Length: 258
Image (cartoon, rainbow, N blue to C red; front, side, top):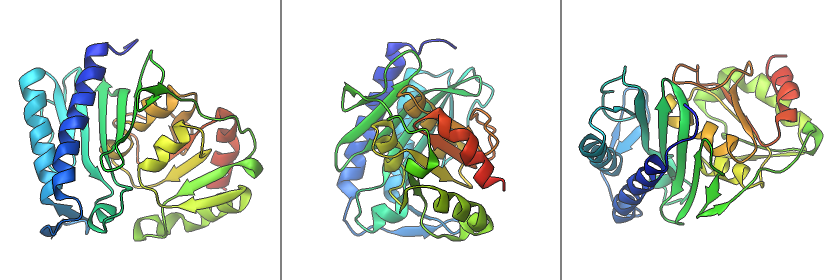
């Protein structure tokens, strides 16, 4: 697929607007929390927003596939697939911290062509689509030039069980950069697209987690790959590197695979 049609971009914004309305109703309210088999929490806000988004996609593009975090995939062989993470950062949502986000992506034959990172409480939104500049709240943004790890600002997940198998590799990278910040959930990827962060590394993500990152970062001048430097697809293994400057990629891969 070449340039992403404007109608898909407009529709993705409509999806984000719809989910944001739901999240603002639940934020900093007492909500029932369920624990999924993988140990992660899920709330009614997660379920309601994904259900409503799926219904909207079904009515508008009934031949498109839908892959989300809370419900089964439908039409997985469709040429176009909408990829949904209704709340990326549910723990932050439950803690009343506005660093969670809505993630929406559109994949065409497995390659991501459109992405949205939306923070509905701060009302901050990054939209990236092939053939279009990435925007932050409607204004074009660019990553910043940073060709050396020694000058780079790194953002990584805080110490968690899912990152423990990779602690040594991540430590190698942490010691090579200028400084590191922890957490920030999906909001960090928007900040990278806007030129405030240079490098993000994460592990054990699903397609709904990293789907929007390629178009949001790539169309702002950056690059998103797996730990071997391969382009991200629906089948990527969940270990990702996102760099504002492609010159960081080689040394980052070397640190992670040392």
